[in-house]
Length: 363
Image (cartoon, rainbow, N blue to C red; front, side, top):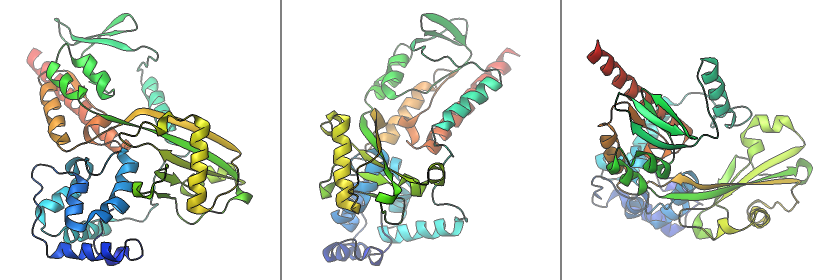
């Protein structure tokens, strides 16, 4: 969402907005310190119009947050490093773009899983079972305590289990509750993590009644005053959807940002109607959908305010004092699937080291 040149945004921003971007080259350095809000820094360098029209819609889509609160160091670390290395933001962005272009390989813009990402956890579960692992559902963990004889004691669904090592991979409020007896300091940090809620509205249309522009969808700047914050042309983004039913077009809109509660209080029918209204205004869809579905994610997206990296470091520092315990999840290093997978891998690597250390001490 941050341009390398003003010319790249001709026709997107106003003349005043384009002129403001050009000032970046002559402005003195804007210090970022240990962290800074993305919106605050970009507005200082390029003007608020760039934030409101480009940065805010992108970050609102990923984090359902406020660009003027979101940590640049956490959400866009490449941009943070560029801000520390360059006086001019656009110069730093051009350097990032050049590196990305040099590393780019032929392939699709978006990568997914045929059948949808919902197939991923099912495949992981099947792999665990195939290797002799056990998965217990409907068995909420109510207590996690160190076992005096070594390892950990877990109380789940009224039963006690023993484990040599434990990964706590649950949202921050649940993690805080479980960790409070053994690490009250980590629990206090986790309890302070805020969340945003959102809803996805899926609409299916007869292909003969809908004509869509090219592309995979669009983002909506909050300053436009619309209810939806984005729309995905799912049938154009994912080929397997179009192949399943060539006569149907599937779209998806999303609503809900940090601090917005009223819109999520509407019933499903209202969310469908407001999505239809905004889609009609944006791309001219007047047809009635043949099927709809509303999926709500209450407190689904952790927020990364300025200072978030410090909070994560403190949590991990407290957890490091408890051998055989690790944490992972969206509230630490990123909300996307790749970031969550990387977080899980790091947790397992940590525990592998802990267990090797125990073996060496007892050998």
